Amino acid sequence: MTERSEGIKKRAPAVTPSDEGGLMTGDPLEEVRARAARLRGRTERVRLGEVTVRDLCRYAIAVGDDEYAVAARAAEAAGRPVIAPPMFLTGILSWEDGPPEDELRPDGLGAQESPCTEGLPVRQVHGGQAVRLLAPVRAGMTINAERSLTGADRKRGKAGDFVILGLRTEYFDDSGTPLVVSDESVIVLGDGDGA
Image 1 (cartoon, one colour):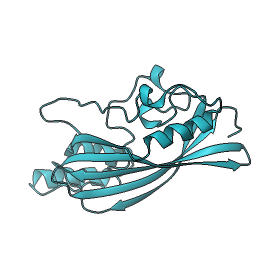
Image 2: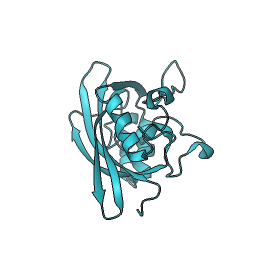
Image 3: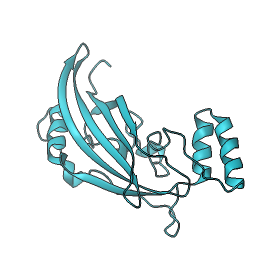
Image 4: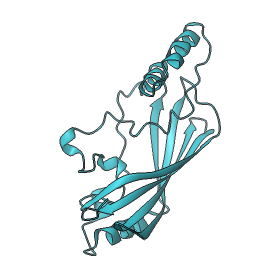
């Protein structure tokens, strides 16, 4: 996705170091919960940019749907609308170029994809995702997103304690038409846990 007149647009961090603060409780998982409590109810609004046919084709090829890419280019050449693959918006981990390798966390994620965990000795894994497709996404649309933290629950499993973060991302176009809603869970583990 590209911004027409602004070039590559960087997304503001969802949580800044000053929002997260330093380790306060001595227990990293309890600190994740405390940070989440401070962020609950806040929404991060981001203008992602314009969807291009190239973006859609690159996504399709990356997920092994070469036929989509051929059909999309044919539709574009014929002047017909190009509809995005259903999971296009939610399939993009980050709309930025991505952090340099030396800025990745030990679990391989960038800080943007790691809410409430900056500076803490924790790891994260994806817990699941529920997606509602509300309207088609077309090449040429400008996409906006609102992301919010919906919960942080501490649980105990066989490998030890963990926190499940709930995140909601709502995607919409410039006119405000809702396109997709994604509810996902992220599992936060202490570095000493056996997972």
